[in-house]
Structures are given as structure tokens and as C-alpha cells.
Length: 139
Image 1 (cartoon, one colour):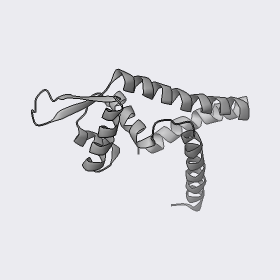
Image 2 (cartoon, one colour):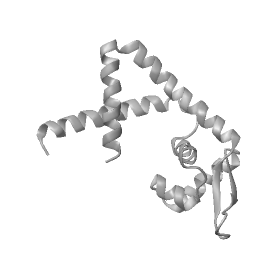
Image 3 (cartoon, helix red, strand yellow):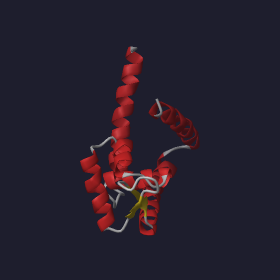
């Protein structure tokens, strides 16, 4: 690894951490729960085990998170169509609404900050950088 790549990695990690913490101030749903709702939105109904694997947490931890989301009526359970021992967790209409509101708050704050803080040239550079960050995250 080159020293240049290491320096960029350190600066990027620090900046992304600060930005993530700032965006979290807009959150109303705890991050772990919002991540579960987002996974269900992207992937459709999933078993608790599949959710745990997707989020890289222990199945017991995911079972607790799903339980909390069920108490809030943000997710529902239904029988698995082919395996009677399993059930599928899916977003409820209230969960979809809560997730959309959460995403709107996050994106709204960030859009306002981009508008207020960055020049047109910086916005263009940031847009190009977003694609690079996606590429790195997929690695």
C-alpha cells in the first residue's frame, strides 16, 4: 500500500465518520432498526436469519431488533411459503412510511448542507466522488 493511498484512506475514514455522525442527528429511528427496515425495503421479505446475515449480526441480536420493530408495528411476520418452520419478516405500511420519512430527513439535511456549503464546481466533484465511494463500498 502506498503512503498516498494510506493518507487518503485515513482522511476519508475520518471525514465519513464525521458526516455519518452528523447525519445521525437527523435520525428518529435507531440506526440498527433503520438498517433492518432498509434491507427489507431493498430485498423484500426475509427470514430473521437472512436479515442477520445481511446485516452481519448474530441471529439473536436480529431477533431482538425484529421484536422491537414488531412492537412498533413497523414490520410484520407471515408464514414462509415453502418451509413451515420459518417465517418471513416484511415491512408494514407504517414501516415503509417511517423509513421514507427517515430517508427524507437525512437527505434533506444533506441536500441543504450541500447547497449552502459547496460551490457548483464542488458539487460536481462530490457527485463524481459518490460513484467512486459506491465502487469502493462494493469491493
